[in-house]
Amino acid sequence: MRSVAKLSELPEATPVRIDVDGVPVCMVRSGDRVRAVHDTCSHQQWSLSDDGMVWGNGIECSLHGSTFDLDTGKPASLPATDPVPTFAVEVDGDDVSIDVTTTTNGAPFPEH
Ligand code: FES
Image (cartoon, rainbow, N blue to C red):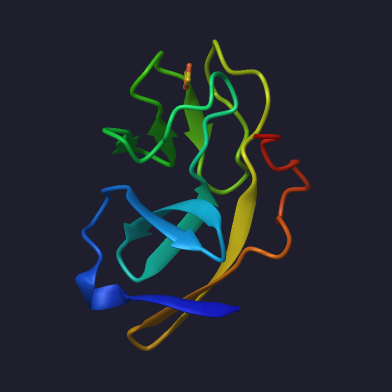
């Protein structure tokens, strides 16, 4: 786990891109909870945090509109068919930590 952010500084329901040990991560705060997925869309490698829209339990890629479940990383709509990696997040008071050494859903990292 690496400390990456302060909960109080994360906007609600807005994707935030951070680099954690060279891994691009898209973080989304929902109240006191933070989810983290790999920032690279599994369709054509667009950044999910680049104008990505959070709604419900998912994030929509701004390039072609695929949505991904923030808990499972699974795509909920085409054109993406593969999941994005999800990462473990710990919130301890105001401290947010993420582990990018492994994925919680088993999805492979993008190859590029
Ligand atoms: S690059 Fe994300 S849906 Fe196409």
